[in-house]
Amino acid sequence: MRRRYLFTLAAAVAILVAPPAFASDLSSLLANHEKDNFKLIHVSDLERLMAAKDAQVYVYDADPPDYRHREGVIPGAKLLPSSDRYDVATELPADKSAKLVFYCYNLRCMASHAAARRAAKAGYTDVSVMVDGIDGWKKAGMSAAMLK
Image 1 (cartoon, rainbow, N blue to C red):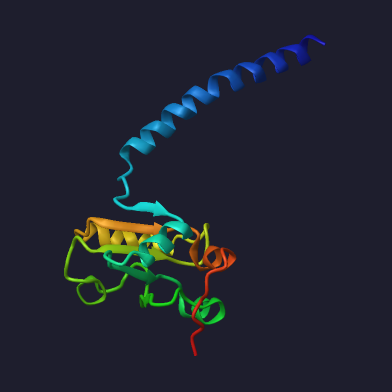
Image 2: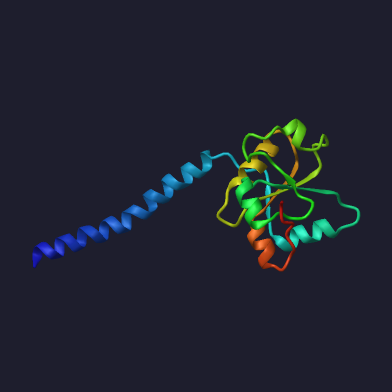
């Protein structure tokens, strides 16, 4: 009985002590991580940007070709050859203040984040990721252009 009590007491102490230590390690890790210089937006935000008469927005699809052929793309989106190795000078507009929006498949897809990170590091100042992706776009009732 005493042995079980000591084991339970040791487990309780470990549980009480571990979270602050873990939180400290986590906050240290987060403090040393470079902050992403892009915004996260949703379908409704992109729809509003695309509908604005005076705002020019450049939309980029960061999905691999097989996803694009299966799921389609947002009408008017430019297709990146890759999410992390595209040529900034030829794929993106010359104006570093241009409004850029990247997307990929869905909330779990990080290709759009990699593409946006690359644009931000190249000096673009108005960069966003539409996190819902083409999947969220279609679920919201928006049309997708199918590739041939």
